[in-house]
Amino acid sequence: MPFIVKHSTLLRVLSLLIFVVVGLNLQITDDFVIHFAVFIFIFVFGLFQVLISIIENHYYAINYRKFIHNTIYRIIHFLVLIFVAYIVFFMTSLYTNQFVVVSLFIFAVLTGMYIDHRDDKNTHPKTKGVHNE
Image (cartoon, rainbow, N blue to C red):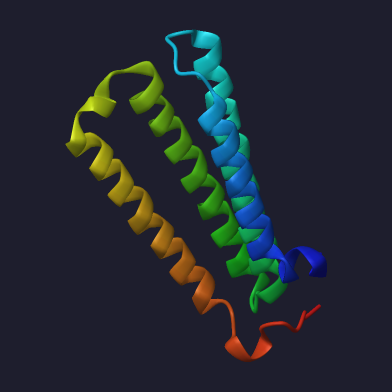
């Protein structure tokens, strides 16, 4: 686990590069199987990012109970956003409406910032890099 925490930024950048390279090579068609494969690909990428955040926050957490609450909030946030994005982008044509897309983006950013704020309050800056067991 210390390796993952130490190299978390590198892991995030590498996974983003893989996501972009594979995403650019996917053909855009109206085939349902391609849409489903893209959804699974996006889900795996997002889940990887959430798991890295959880591992980092577990490593630096002061209060374990608050860490569990923040982890549950982060997982619920991810699942709600992935399913709303699936409905907006794959099941309907709402993605053509800018207000729907921008409001979804703003909602995702603000709720994510709130969860990160809760995590920052549970992380003491003097204990960063020191694992408290």
